[in-house]
Length: 60
Image (tube, rainbow, N blue to C red; front, top):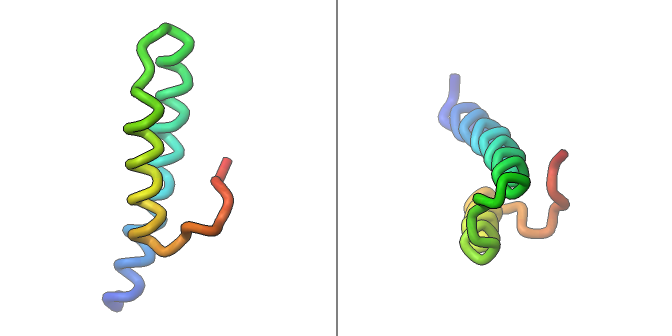
């Protein structure tokens, strides 16, 4: 496996984890225990900047 393939796999994994965390945040919000929206938005922005997908829409 090349370095590029490893990086692509890690990016894909990070995207999947992001989707899971968002779903968990929604469920926690239903219980009144959600993360702050500002912190979530900042983390999402940093993640998208790191993988070069600032202009792509969200998954799921």
